[in-house]
Length: 455
Ligand SMILES: *Cc1c(COP(=O)(O)O)cnc(C)c1O
Image (cartoon, rainbow, N blue to C red; front, side, top):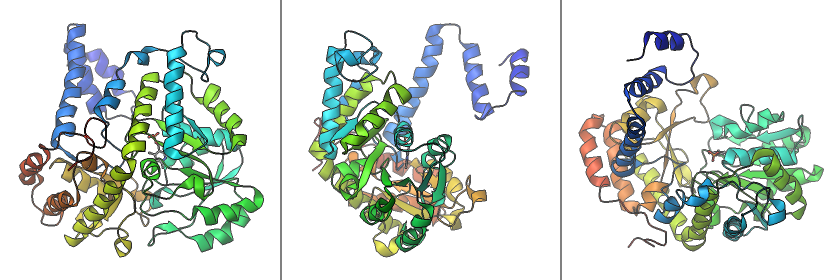
């Protein structure tokens, strides 16, 4: 139990976090008599997650990927305790003793270039958010106008007023978007852009189903020297595996993205570009502006995941997309309305359900989680700002189930579980045991040196 003093101290204290969960942690710490007990409390929570989320859940979160055993092992490597800021090479570093770190970082950078067929790559972004801030620092000035997509059509906060783009002081105009075709409204963009004259146009979405008209948009804005920035947070693996459009080849000046989404590496950021004129501003924005110590253990893990993408990216990503299409079709067949059903559901790793009639995204995601089916609530194009905490959509991604070796037939089974809970109104608890039984045989990760391709 917390002491009287703590209750008083904390009851008047503003918290954005759930105060009940924080109070629970304080109670545990209060009851601990030693380091060993505090340590055991942390380790036990990690273990509970590993057994539940890692072994007994069907994880359909679109931004998560299981890493290979080698990548995971490297995250705990000795080099993770070493500080190496600056650029690669003795004269570019503050610290001596970095010759092997230089080797690791150079391998990572060259593997990233190869994976994305790009002239330049950087490995020092601890998150894709930092990658986007790098672009807004290097290629825009406070007061500049940019265009990006709003959240309800899939846009991400990092490119909006409430994220790095806003903090950088940019003026943000919405890219017109067709809410039915789930694509940029190119005709409207063609008319709007010359009036707005943005310095940058940010493409790439969190809710992302279909490709973007990058080339056409590039040609429109090139007239006044503007650039296309592709935020490929979600699509990076698909791009590397040749299963989506190739933004750098289609006119994007720079691409950022999350290493831990489809790319299936350690959670962090990646940035690539081709034009040598961008190298100085971009690398200066990374160091010394936005990154110092950049976790060399993570860099080593990222290097291996890039090698995995070079080797298995095509097969792995093609199966991810086939699985997403199969899952979308199977859910629609069971009476769950899916976005883009008139055009094959998706060309990515995601498929989006409209679950308004089943109680909305928040309620549905919580209900499915009681059956160990992990998804996320998602805004839909016709959701209003008032709906943001309780949006109408549900996003389902196929990265993890694919890396565990599942194919189209297994997507049918997963859709059946979801249909029983949502459409047939079965209690999640009555589906739970079958979900666990279905999941338990899939405990191996494929598309890596340890396992290769599933049969
Ligand atoms: C997830 C996401 C980000 C942020 O990526 P992190 O790796 O979590 O920092 C940025 N942009 C888009 C479009 C995203 O979906």
